[in-house]
Length: 57
Image (cartoon, rainbow, N blue to C red):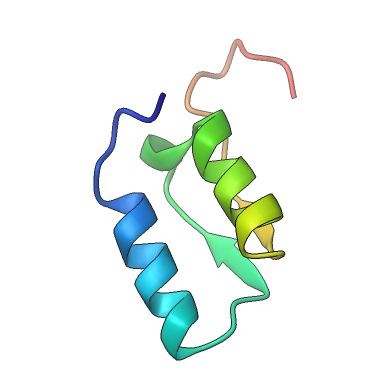
C-alpha cells in the first residue's frame, strides 16, 4: 500500500489532460503501487529512484 496520498490523483489527472510516456518522481514516491500505476495503468515508463539504497533493483 502506498504511503503517499498525492501521487495517484496528480498523475491520473495529468494523464487525463495529456498522455504520459515517462513519469519521473522523487524517491519519496518510490513504491510498488506507484510503479505499477504508471506501468500498467497509464502504459508509461516510471523513473523513480529507490527510496532505500540497500534495496536491490
